[in-house]
Length: 187
Ligand SMILES: NC(=O)CC[C@H](N)C(=O)O
Image (tube, rainbow, N blue to C red):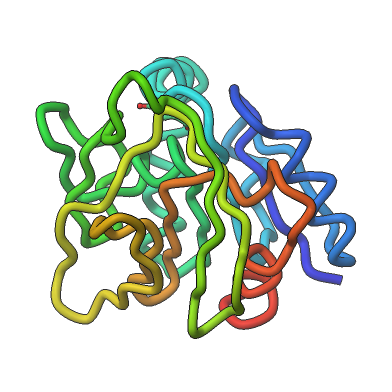
């Protein structure tokens, strides 16, 4: 059974745990550095990246997560989790800075803070529901980074080798295909 950690400091933790369990994985809550031992993959959930960063500092998790990312541990960052992974952020300092993408926060304006769309993702499937909540987007990607989905002319899902990041919340729908893609083809 694959052991997948879920960073459990803040945000949509329980939904990821449930979806991982529905895919037959063991989900491990990651709250301190030794929880990272013997994981096959790690999910960084959505929530609020500034708050998460404060908690990553407080629980001394930033450097340990960066280290395992650099060692090749597969990671999937959703929404705020993508912001944590990005090498560069527009107007903010980066956090883990491991995924070769530039990300802008809160990209979809106030009137439409939250919305759901269906995405056709050639690698994964058609009409996959995606919930955007004060969502970021990927402004540009480095060489070798695969763009897997765009919405409204903006990159919303990309893969940099063992690191996958999306703008939206796949775990807030009942469609597990993106998480399944991560678990079955990257972990
Ligand atoms: N749903 C989310 O994860 C929103 C991300 C949030 N706007 C941030 O900047 O961290």
